[in-house]
Image 1 (cartoon, rainbow, N blue to C red):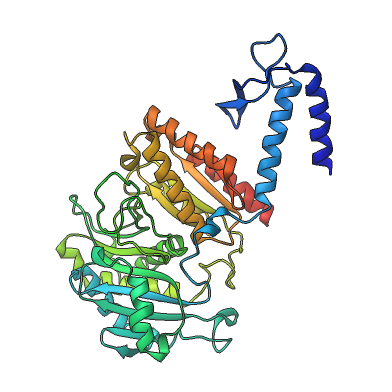
Image 2: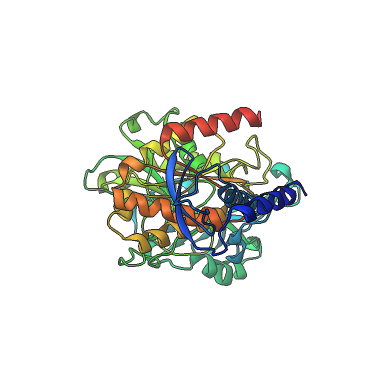
Length: 431
């Protein structure tokens, strides 16, 4: 009622100052420490521009606030794209016989005794230790199943592996009846630098105009909510006893790149970067410990019983290098943060406004889809890492989303320091 009353008051004031002819005009105003260009439907009598104190401008700003306020009280538009995973379901580990690092990780995981693996069929296993249903040994009484599936083909050829699991392996085995909540691909990482590494990244091909590297051009699967927590887990495991020879391995996030494409939230966990590292048994055991630490708890998913709050913030990155070292710092410094898609500078460079808008919208929708209970999505735009034209296109795409988005609140920040301040302030308020 107060909002409506204020709008009526401003409208009455504007009727005195407005021209009989209503003409759209461009106005410039200061907002969030940067200048934006917006469109107004009012023009002042005898004035060439509208200043922020003018009643017509105040009405326009008020209506913009109302639109945002109403949007934040509704569910996100991403509901039109159904959530691909189940929050009360199973996690599927996927390995490839064509990938040496993948098989190193799979063998280490199968040999890791706490999982207590039981065969489901050819190339399939389920963890007896992590089979929890209806409160029988489960944290918070939530269903939690973990399966391992070894496939013959290359990872990039596994489009729709979630649907294949549901229609094939799961249908043939009574112990794999729970729907999938997420998929973790165990894979090799290749780099020209040859630097040893343990990496985690979301998957997908952000540009529709470029040849896809597996998957579908311009489509991004939902990122698994485990990205941040799994990075912490492997970093912690690497520091543990028995992994002293892994000290030269870098633990890092990578930007979103390559397929396959699927509807279920997913990530890649990798050993890099040459054949000398892909067969390292200690690297495989490190991943086995990290995966056990991550999968034996359920705190990565919204609504699960955990020290993390249900409304933990989500961070999406636009700009930066392929190795997202700045995001590593965010993950380390803010334990309750979830990580969404990360688009590197080279993906956005010289793409043009239309392609950039498509990539930004797809990253936003996909990230929000994987976090249906989150309340805030921080979009980190590393302005100094983007060329002027690309930066302008990114900000315009975000402005467009901000004006039409409903539900999950979008908060755009332009630097790591600003993001750190926002997260710190949020944490202090939450506590």
